[in-house]
Image (cartoon, rainbow, N blue to C red; front, side, top):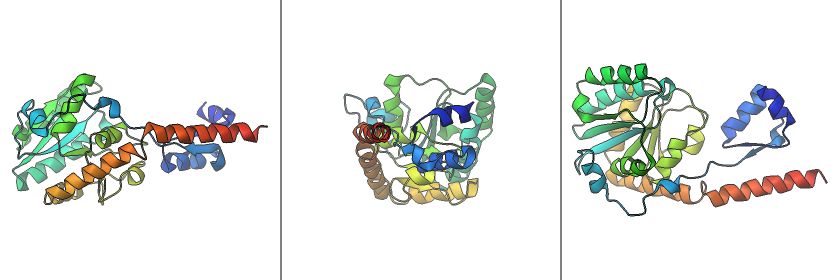
Length: 252
């Protein structure tokens, strides 16, 4: 069915070169038929009243000096929470300031209990905040303002909206090398990509990232810059307009 839809369309819009290449390779779609339009930002989640990081942290019982990682979004197995918990346990042993916030609704009750049980068995459990529930729109900002880094330990992915949420809030990201993360995350500029997708590599990235807090702040500023430029809705609209114009002209 997907093949028939792809074949029937005059133009196919995708969010990255990675997804475009998958369509070309797996469905034999002509490359020139596929237009890359980057995903727009999530600036609509930015609060009208500016919130300081300290204010946001007080809602979670976090301190000013804590070094906070955030895992956000619907919790599914492929999102690699097991990998993150392994890595956090290792990194927390070496860095007493580390805290982890997990926020989002698990896909099933069984998954909610599985991760609750897993966290309860960790030595670092007192440094993990587990909000296994749907996060309403008006509360999203607090989580992102409170954190230092957003973590994306996914096992597989095509594209992630959480990355754009992080960029909108000016937060750098840490991620596995899957899907289009190597394309959308500029390593050392807007975040960090793991060398290998395992806990040992993740531990090193976590520990190394907090050795230079000023560098994290600069990464966050650059992430925000990307949100305002490359991933702005104005840029997306312009590329979409150009694609439609090209399609119309080719049929005259």
